[in-house]
Image (cartoon, rainbow, N blue to C red):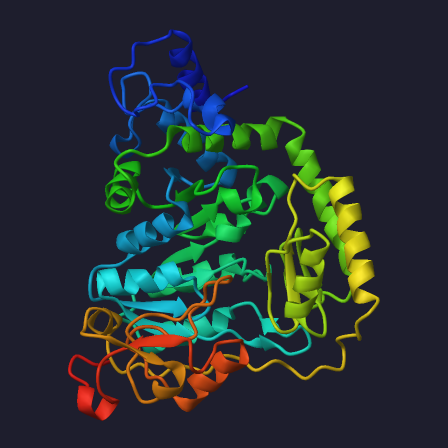
Length: 454
């Protein structure tokens, strides 16, 4: 078994060292007994344990094994989830003030990067899959057109796979980016299992972020940043800006162990079986299928008449999906879901759906309105602000993103104008016109002015 970090931590703990350093539990019992077994491996930076952001010790060996599996040059462990990875990646790919070509459907952490790095977003809007009712894959030709129109763009930031499991042609998009001298940064948070299913497309990116905790048997906040064309020293330098100076050794050891278990243990075969079971679910129920787009083989997206009410009915049966929208319910299936879990899911779906109409005749859902940017995100975010009820926000400049979670994709972001269409869309997806508020700049747009605008 090749688990260099876990093995080093276990061997050091077995020497019964006198821990006159943090963390304060000293490797002994924790108040929550369930966490106590991990305390022995919860060290700080010491000669036997290595230092994540110094790029030394058994952590480096464990990261290299991840890089090898994923087919990339370097890997950095992240203990702050994909949010840490997205911020790190855009810091590496861009300089403050740069323009970045960005998938409008990106996670809110990418919008935080716009504010922190004072980046100018140039948005790409995904084509809509009308029958499936979800945003489709990004078109390489659209990326090429946008980069031709704006040769100053230094980086392209895309999400693949999406929350609905839709995958874009990353190798083709990477070729487009290379022709224009732009870096391709991919939020692949929901694709951490891809390398273990033989799906190598994320390796085409210059930088890609994977959330191990989303689709692998790993603890919360476990993630990795993959890189081509960047040194480990560069990854460590940028990653340390957004990561704790006391990264969790149990989380890093878990990343080390889950990779080995998926390669050498039964978990890899379990994932292949999960993909097969997902295909059967797609055949049995109205769902997003490979006929609609290239998909994550283990993401099951149920199509239904009302996703919100179907989700509530399933929860009454003790079945908790990942998310729902007006026409879909999203289920994340992993190698941890065995036959018993899938049988229980099938019984629950049969019980709930037998009382509901088929979704096929429903009109296409309303998509979020395309925003009008009037200020740079950083200027809007750091301006004086006030909170207003949704019904009173028309004509104001947004100063804090509104991103229903999941999926965490902003309907409106700092620097964008609140319009009638924005308000109507938020009301349609469940926002209360009186109780829910927006954080905006004081005064109407004509009063706030456009100084520093786009």
